[in-house]
Amino acid sequence: MNRIKGILYAAVSSSTFGLAPFFSLTLLLAGFSAFEVLSYRWGVATIALTLFGWCSGCSFRLEKKDFLVVLLLSLLRAVTSFSLLIAYQNIATGVASTIHFMYPLAVSLVMMYFFQEKKSLWVMFAVFMSLLGAALLSSGELEAKNGDTIVGLVAACVSVFSYAGYIVGVRMTRAVRINSTVLTCYVMGLGTVLYFIGALTTSGLRLVADGYTWLIILGLALPATAISNITLVRAIKYAGPTLTSILGAMEASCRIRTNDPEITNHVLWPTELKRRFSFAGAKV
Image (cartoon, rainbow, N blue to C red):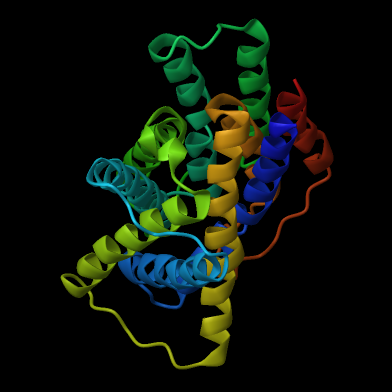
């Protein structure tokens, strides 16, 4: 039963997180810096999660040992979001996503060789199928307009290892005993502080007044951040890091491919076939 719950949570996390590139790039094209986008994204998500936790009767008290673990997880998660956003700014979103979706392989290898998870050809085959599906779904030109290709590629690679570390850490550290809502709230909250400091020390943080921009921010912060992250944590706890990361490849089928400033949507005839590779990997 727990495994089924984990799979369902992973599916929700994947489908909601896949919306993040669209909302993020919309704000970037409107002139927001990476730190501004992430400050609003994680800040609003933290407020929403805090209200949800308070209404649910969660206790937000942490032991000192727990706080150190949560701080490390927050740093890993913050680095993931920041590096992926930098990658989106410098290389095509499809290429950045393809590289990012190498994290299921990293998670699987870490679990097998460092935590003695049973080695399985089926698991590696599932990872391969998921990676293939994500690559096909995200295929496109390498370079983004006015971007630095090297910076983009390095940033995308950093996101692979930081995200894999976060996923493994949630399950294999003291964090697994912390309430999912509380853990996610602390991870988002600490990340918000880091992004806010980054914004103030670089380009500053603008105050948003118009309703349209707030709709974009809410779309980024609520479904693509708050919901996706809390369901991700629950999926990791119920289904384990490896299966959750494999199912995470379904994010690619929800990502909106953006290759120009107008953020046009491309619907190509092989899309259904490409999706099948991602879903096949999850089913295995």
